[in-house]
Image (tube, rainbow, N blue to C red):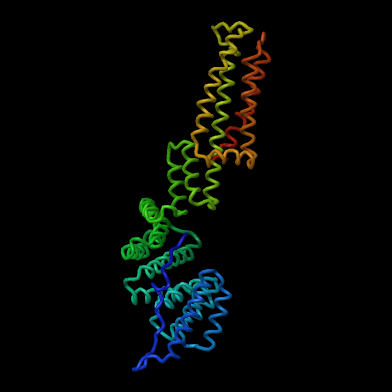
Length: 404
């Protein structure tokens, strides 16, 4: 899930500067500027994910100024982003001893606690304190709603031997959903608030609510990869959607989220369904060739005289060509470029995709042999007929599951 975190200034209190009645001296002003520069350099290193360098810089700074609040909150942020949650918790606790109402320290402490031995109760108490301290801060509501959702599901699963009762989940998640709704009310343009609300709605089985939240996310962030993937899957899996349309939907979503492995698998499945359709066109050609030669006797009807004339044999190519032109080639040309490229990519990568194309080519070859050779007897054409149809029909249901 992509999260847009607020800027540091949104949740971090500035360090307090003590002024004498006559103002700061030049030396004191220079010292304050140096301290702020060190912390800002550390934050810049954290943004670059150079966590070890940032921790070393802050550690050296705090060794000389152990009571610097901004230094401790910056160190807590550094350790948290580096997933060193125990160290992040220790730094946040030190910051809270200096200022018990520091909002960034409370936020970092609450988020770290859930990763340190699953101390959910302490994390909940800390985040509720954060919300009480900053009732207009949307971010505090989002992380509290996220915590409560996960905590209550874990407790419910533990109490039921690892099983989740869908009927009870909606009641369990009612309060987290309300808290997430409050975050959206406070910050209707923040994507992360909608993301948390979507997660809760999805876990609660509220599909309509989750779909509405997805549309809100895409309104704010049109290239949001997870929301695009969910919308594409929902549209592609709707009843009556053809394989070509499904493949186009997945390719469109992949253009915005090229690294999404799930979307790529879905595109492969839709592409395979397209290839299976080509195989059916080949079977129709075999059937048409069999009808032209009147291969199988029907009681009460006289079979066509063999050999068939050259004109009739050449005319048999017309419906076959039309079938392939409108049923395969025209459809292929109307696909998105990404889908067309994926067709050949899947053929190179997938064994069953190659099998499908080989079966289609074999069936067409059998159809051409049946229809274009001037047979004087029906024995060989009948063998070719069953040779063209039987291998495909033998696998058509077996490989159906491979198309999703």
